[in-house]
Length: 67
Image (tube, rainbow, N blue to C red; front, side, top):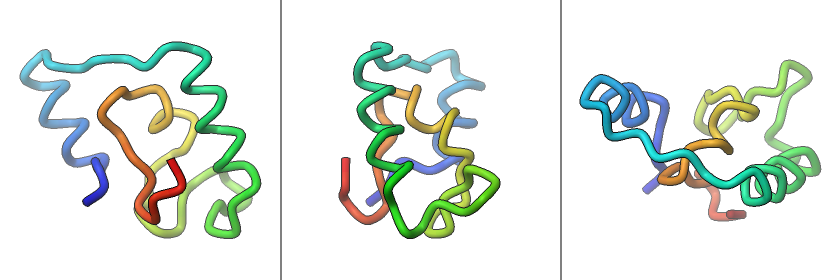
């Protein structure tokens, strides 16, 4: 199951956010940039998350398992 924007908001409210390292975030975004589910606005059409933000959260995951 994918770690969603809703999950991120819950963790943020509880002060449990862990950010990923810049290298990991860059690798994830590179994968998303080649994905057929990324739209022109940089949003994932599968989960609805803004990808530049989603890749930064350590617990987040791709809804189709690419990362």
